[in-house]
Image 1 (cartoon, rainbow, N blue to C red):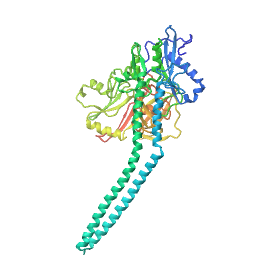
Image 2 (cartoon, rainbow, N blue to C red):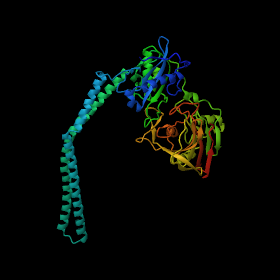
Image 3 (tube, rainbow, N blue to C red):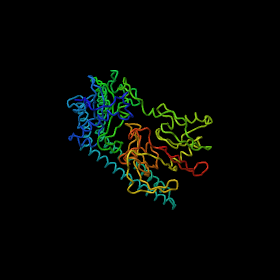
Image 4 (cartoon, rainbow, N blue to C red):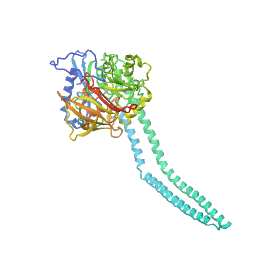
Length: 556
C-alpha cells in the first residue's frame, strides 16, 4: 500500500501553500512522515549494506480522495536493482522489467559492446599491432643508424676538403658519395614506409570493424534513450501531460540528463496526480553515509536537484499554489549600504546579507546598483566589484572606481596577497584541531586547523560545488575556534584560496569540519540568514603602498 494515513494523534496545522522544492524548511507534517519512513527503512536488513552507501528518500503529504490525511513516500533511482518496492510509490515508468523493450534493446547494445571488446582483444589483432610496433621500431633503428653513418661520412669529407690538395676526380667522387647516401636514405625510408603501410592496413581491418560497431552502438543507445524519454510522461496539477523531451526542450539543457524522472519528487507528484491525491507539502532526506564528493548528511533534509528535477518540477507544479522562493524573499530591498572606507581609488562597504554582489540570474538588487542610487555623486563613476561575496554572505567588499584600480587590486586577490578573515557560526560543536598550525594574520599568531579539499562545480546540481580530487581546484582554508555558544561553534576562517562556496563546503563536508554553517540552505539547514560574515581585509594599497586594515565585525 502506497498511501500511509497519519495516526489520529498527529495534530499539526496544514500548510497554506505547497513547498517550494528547491529551498525549504520541512513542514512538521513532513517531519512526522519522514520519521515513519526512517523507522521503516531502519528495519529492512536486506538493504542495509546498500543503504549505508547513501540514498535519497522523499515524503509527500497528501489528502486522499476520501479526505483522509496521510503521506506517500519514494526513493531515488533503484534499490536492490529494482524500481518498484512495497511501501513506496512506483516509478513514473518502470523500464527495468526483465522481458521489456528496454532490457531487450539494452541486451542488444551489450552484445555489440562485447563484440567490440572481443575484436579489440583478438589474438590476430594483437599480432598485427605487435608486428606494426616491431616494424616501426626496426625502421627507426635502421634509419637512425644510417643517418649517423651519413653524418660520420660527411665529417670525413669535410676534413678532406679542409686539408686541401684534392684533385677534380676526388672532389667529384666525394660529391657522388654524398648524393648516393641521400638517395639511399630516401629509398630506405620508402622501403620501410611500404612495410609499415602494409602492417597498418592489417590493423585498420580490425579498427574499421571496431569503429563501425561503435557507431552502431552510439546510434542504438541514442534511439533507446530517446524512446525512454518519450515513455516518461508527467502530469501536472492542471491535468496536462508532457514527456521528458517536451519538458526539457525549452530549458537550458535541451537533452534530459541520465536518470531524469527517477528522483523522489517527480515520482511522488506523479503518483498523487494519477490516483487523485491532493499534494500539500513535500520534503526529501538523505539516509546513509556521506558521499565523498557531495555534501550529504544522514537524516538531513535537502532540496530537489536542479539539472534533473528543476525543469520537471516547474511543469508538474503548475496548477498548485506554491510558496515563493526563499532566495527571492531574502533579497529584500536594503535601506542603505554602509561605506566603511573611501579614497580616490576604492570604496570599501559592508554588504548586507541578502544582497547580490553583482547582477545575477534572479531579479534582485545588486550592490553597485544600490550604491549608485544611494550616492548620486557616483552616477558617472565606473564602479567595479573587485571580489565577490555570496548573496547570503555579509561583510567587507571592495569596489574599484576605475579599470586601472580594479586590475591592480584584483591582481592582489588572484596572487593571494590579500589576507581575509571571516566569522561564521557552525550548526554544532566541533573539536579543536589535533595538531594546530600557526597562522600569521594581521601580524598576530593564531593557532589554527587546516582544511584542504579541492572543489569544482557539481554540474548535475548547480550552483552546488563538490569535492573532486580528479577535477577540483586546490582550495585551502585555515580555521580558528573562537568559542562555543549553546550547541553552536563560532569560528574564524582564513581562506588561502578563493573558490566558489569554499568556506561553506569546507565547513559542511564530511572530510572538512562536517558541521554546516548556520542558515546554509545549500549544504545545511535554512535559517533567518546565512551566518557567515567577511570581517577583515588586509592588503598593501596598490597606489599608496601602505598596508591597510579594514575590520567590521559580524552583527550576529
